[in-house]
Every structure is written in C-alpha cells, then in structure tokens.
Image (cartoon, rainbow, N blue to C red; front, side, top):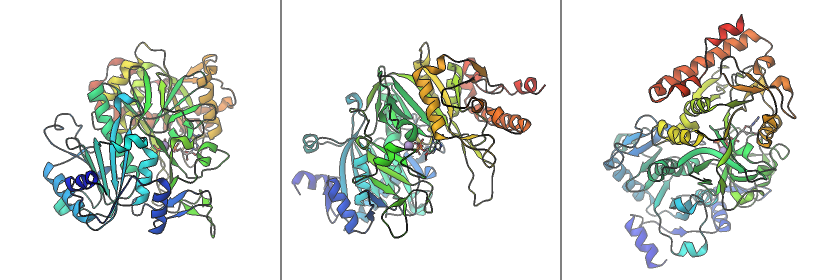
Length: 537
Ligand code: ATP
Ligand code: MN
C-alpha cells in the first residue's frame, strides 16, 4: 500500500484493519465474495447474495447529526431523527474498533451525471459484494480520475457491527447516521445495500435545493426518439424502474434525479430493480441486465440448479438486482436529458379507486406531489385484507432532509406557465380493491404511457372524475375503454363510491398538515367529497 493510502487510513481511524482493498475490479470483488462464501454465481453469471437480517431499508433507524449547521435547516421529526455530535463520534469510534483485524473494501465513485453537481464519494464496506453494489449504483470515475481522487463524502458501512441502544443512543442495533458537517454516513447492523444508495440520495436532497436551488426528485427518467424527456415519480413498488425501461425510449435513470434550469440528470450510475416475478417477456431489458457483474439480492434458485426462481420470494418480496446503467441496452451516456415535457406520478392504488391514467392541472399536480399517495397491500400473515394508504410527501418522504414545501415550491416554479403535461398513473388495482379486483396489466400501463408520450391522448375527449376532479381519457390506443373509468370496472357501483369517498377523506386528512403552506389553487386540486352527493342522485 502506498503512503497516501496508509495516511488516509490513519487519519480516519482505520489503520488497524487487516487489509484494505482499494477499488478492486468487478471480477476481484466477485471472486472475494465467492471465496468468503458470501455469495454464489447464477447461471447467467450474476452474483447472488443474501443481505441477512434486513432485506429492506429501516427508516425508523435513520438519524441526522444535530449541530449548528443542521439545527435550523433539517426537517426534524420521525423522518430525520436527531442524534448528538457526541453520539456520532462515539459510534464512529466503536465502528472503527470493530473493524480492527478485519478486511475492508474501499470504492471511490461519484454521484450526479452533471459536472456542475458532481459529488465524490468514498464507500467503505465490510463485505466485498457491498462494494460491488457501490460500483454498480454510483457513477464510475475513469482510471485517471481514480489516481487523483479526493472524496468529499464518505460512507462507512460495517454491517456486522451492532449498536447498543443503551450506550449508542440508537433505537435498535442497526442504524444509518448522516453527519452533514463531517460529510460522513455511518451504516451499521444492516447489510441491506439500499441504505447506501438512499443515504447519498438524502445528502443530495439537501445539497441540490439548498446549495444549487435545483430540484432533487425520487423519480425515474427516460428520453424519446424526438429527444423529449419524461420523468416518473413514485414510491417504492409503483413502477419507476419497470416503466422507465422502455424499448422505445432511452433510459436516463431509474430512481434519483436532479432538475435544474435546463436539464434532468441522474444522480446514479446504475439501477436497483425489483425482481419479484421478473420475466423476460414482461420486462426484457431488466431480465437481460442480470448477467456477470450484476448483484442479485435475496433471491432463491430453482431446486438443484443455478437458475433463479424469480417467483420464489420466500426470503423477501423485495428481491433486487443491482447493475450498472449500461447493462440496459438503450441507456444514454451521460445520463442527462432536457427539461421534461411529461411528468408521471405513479401510484399503486390498492383500493382500485384512482383512474389508470388521468391528466392533472397545475393545482392538482401540486396537490398530488405534496400528498405522495400510494397504497400498501397489507401483510397476509396478519389476516388483514384491507389495503393501507401511504402518504409520502414528494413521493419520497423518507429521503427528505428538508421540509416537503421546499421541494414543492421548486416544482411549482417549474410547472408555472409551462406546457409540461402532468399525468397520474394508477399502476395498482382495477375492478375492485385488492382482494376483489386485480392489478392492472403492465402492458396496459405501458400502452397508456406510450399514448400520453406520443401525443395521442391530446386528441381524445376526457371526463372529469366526480370526486378527484382528474381528467380521464375516454379512449386510449391498445387499452379497453371500459378500463379508463374505474367506477365502470367495479361490479358494485355503490361500493366504488363508498371506497372512493373513504380514500378522498384520507387524502384530505393527510393534507391538513400542509394546508397552511398551500394556496387556493393547490387546495382546489384535491378531492371534493361534496361532489359525491351530486353523482349518487
Ligand atoms: P423502488 O423505489 O423500490 O425501486 P419502483 O418504483 O422502481 O420501486 P418497480 O421496481 O418498478 O418499482 O416495481 C414495480 C413492480 O410492480 C414490478 O415488480 C412490476 O413487475 C410490477 N407491476 C405489476 N403490474 C404493473 C403495472 N401495471 N405497472 C408497473 N408495474 C407493475
Ligand atoms: Mn426502482
């Protein structure tokens, strides 16, 4: 090891590690993982690993260091839990002590495809496959850039280190702690790699609006043949990754983007796709991206083979594939597009109330952005069949270090006096709520998005939804017309009205907290329950 590297390890308190592996190649990281028996190769060459106890993020265990720098800017509360400078320091030292005598893997990378916002990141992990994740998900510096690399932010991920809530002031043994002053993220107790990417996303959700007055977004993005950009906002599982992978459009990115005066740019250099029920037929791009270099998480094999069984989700529903963006054949390089012409809000409405596609005016767009609605299908174990509403501001509340109105204001300025089309897409249920109806076919959702992007939906007539006020097209190429108006897909019309009213009330209750910051136009963009009476007459 050269002096510079040794000096760095000493400076950050990691001089006691057994060996530090710097920027290992993909084959080396895969090889190390196999040697350590932390993973296996699938028949397509992908590396399959289990993340252990945690197979998803743990939002309740996310902390931000409370100090002079952050005390007035951060949106403190259950999204951004406070932790003291002293607690951070102590846990940092305890993590370093834990790593004495252990190997560590160091990956230098950066975030933001636009040079203006480029953020150098050093990701230090306990396991080699987590380092592969960092390589796949973040942007990859060139060999020359690597020789002169100066990290601005550091992510230290010691998954085997367990915090003790009694002495570490954490909630549990796992944690993600962001220190904006020291520009460090500490991750311990959990080996779920999503914590690494969403940690940096949180940092960018702070830097972009505050430092650059640019909007950061939890969305995917792609570009059409005419160079038009589309962005797809949505909470987990609503279809960002799936729908942005489109054979007719070039992929900019699948999850995190920035939007400044004249461009949309990816924060990342890779995708993190859900794999549940993945098939070549329905999601060909993603299916083909799972090859050597890709990291698969928590999947199962078909018995006695190295063939992945994507339908087997016995470890978790949240099986994932992490791959560099160029594994998607039609991705753009660099991952930058023009100002969007179309914005899609994706929601997986398990109540089956919202139309599969509808057009929003500016007030409605702002209302739905602030609301960030989707629904969760309740766990079958508990025997609950009722779906649960989720309202997550800006379609990404867990990753917002600032108050949601700060992002909403930035979006509002962009929509004002613009010709940007905003659409709400329900990728969830049709023909009834979860249990009665079924999830709308992916091919129909794709057809609706294609029609919106091709301008075909500007030629058709619309009907206003009685409660939500959204404009529903009466027809759409390659989609049965009766699907377009949700009430028509329900056998029991009264039940539809009742369920829609209930959902509208849930929207209104949730919006109470933002009402003071919203103008009349935005408030009018919400559902109008009084309209129901008229409809039922
Ligand atoms: P995350 O933020 O967690 O990455 P995401 O928004 O990227 O979530 P996807 O990975 O695209 O979500 O997951 C959508 C899932 O829903 C996929 O497994 C997809 O196959 C499935 N799906 C089923 N029907 C539809 C539909 N009509 N539209 C979109 N996705 C659908
Ligand atoms: Mn995704």
